[in-house]
Image 1 (cartoon, rainbow, N blue to C red):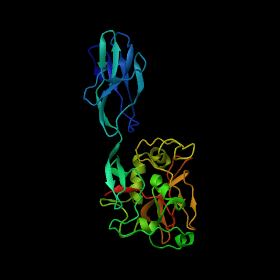
Image 2: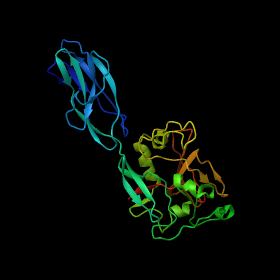
Image 3: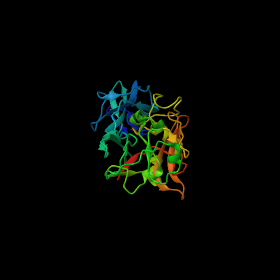
Image 4: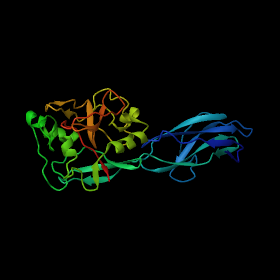
Length: 302
């Protein structure tokens, strides 16, 4: 709490709800110094002592607490923010607070086929922004492209396919792989990367506030790829989850545009493994299992 030259006593409240481009803050004015506060809000900058000459909000007048919405931020950037109050004697400020916006795309990684993927930092992890498209393992060994439904249903070794056996689908959504391919000893991930484990996914969703809300924060916004209503989608993480659909144990393709599913590297049983799925009509993330199904693959950095 600061007493300013204009006589106001002012506190900056904690920064919350931080995304790539927005955050919430505010202040509390406990004394106007004997002159009515005519303007109040918060100001912010990448400099350590922001003023109203920088970007600011206007959030009413008078004493008391107020909440401010900070917008137009850049991902992965350190900002400084403080509350301000203006009366006839001048403008006073609360203490400055720093915060860092959610990480934006931070680089790229290239697979053995030459496909380039953007990367994003979320909490302590670095993730690919796109689903895997490779047709080869890291060491150059080909992954079989199995198009026949019966052959797919009988697999106990690694394979991939394009949704509906249509390569143009993979350009947008990535390819579908069975769990055997996702965890093959030849390694499907580029060097320095790996298919996420169940525990690593839990780290991600815990950081995002739990599985009940994580899906919305991970899904691409809009209905260009996701079916309407694409519930709660904000993509505030930059993860850009897409609904690539799946291939079932009988070889049938289903649900492109409605659901996205991603293999984890964690085995559940002799016949099953953990994966994570998101839907157009929900904000949560949940897991099922069957190793022979075809799902998308998303990698995390070692």
